[in-house]
Length: 508
Image (cartoon, rainbow, N blue to C red; front, side):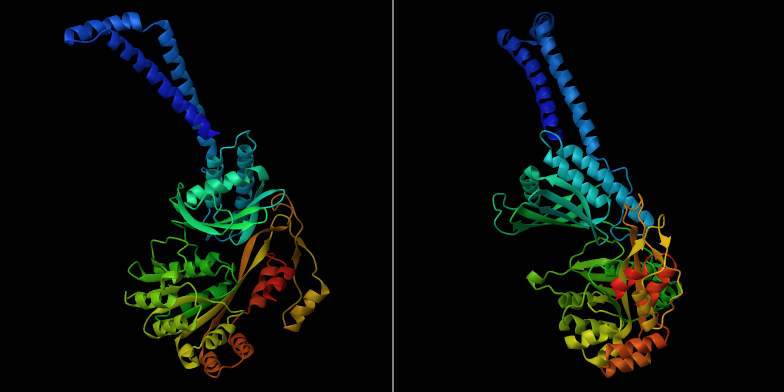
């Protein structure tokens, strides 16, 4: 509604000016000015005769309507910023109970604001989209999903890896919503029979956010996915990520290594990017501002002034491997490679790790010990991999119990049997979810991270050199002090952070 109000206000201001200028013009037409004395005399007569009550009334009415319209527009625009005074969450924030509760509160408030817009007779879709995107940035969402269904359009945010429903929008507004996004993304308005991609910048109080638009035709209309890249983010600190104290100390020592490679393994959405950024922040803090840190990413999702960030572009032939070779010529101390996807990138990373650089990267592997055989399968020489490797980390995210309603209870017999099978204690305590108002009845609030840190020792290097099975490398690492994921998860269970069922579901 803000846009029609604004246009009406502008029109009445213009009408007031036109009435005033028209009366002056008509008077001058009837009484031409020949010199300064005549102008002064005619000006006085104009004020006496031309400014009649009718003209004054018209001008006054227009001015009053314009002022009222401007005031109403300002009020509507202020209401559009319903979340701007609320806490702005970083997409890299550690999702503890406080953060999860803040996200929940903000989503509830945002839903109310959006319903207020969409329930009006003629919804202002420009304002609706602005509020939706502002809310997404505020809660730290990485993606916005708009999925058309037979009954309406489901709007949802992906917040810290979890899809959160915002609202179900009436179906009759879907086409207007899509058209507004197409205008922003500068894609073809009339095409709805093929996928389209675009991008645009969206201003926020914290700075601009770059938004990538993806449109996909479906049987109920075009589906939309928006990927949000924040201009600036706050880096999380390593101690807040959820490492056990002894594991954190071991990992920090590994980050002090002058050269070599630290691999981070985990599924998509397991928090690997958060761990990498927190690790780079720790290195920058401990080594000093003059430490040169370069990253190669696809894409650069978060602008961090502390780093020199490069985005690859595979369509233009600029791959991770080419980017890494170019970055090496920039003389960095520490390098972060977003992901090792192929043999060329893996071999280039190994060379960097052997030539005086500390390199952090991610690998798709099911465990920390499985990283090495995964890279050997890519074609990396085992002896080079063994020489360059410093450590391998594996991580998982589990749902955290709501601290306000969790309840002590014994787990199922089969769950305890799985602990006994690997030699872990079954004495507890154990907790189960209950559900309350603060957690929305789910019994869970936020997430917790599980980590295992495998240090590459001479025995592990021997395993890599001989291409030993992953299970052997894992057993050796445990015998040398590594806390495996399941044991780390059990510690979280006993502390009341999560449930045994959740740990077994995620770790396996």
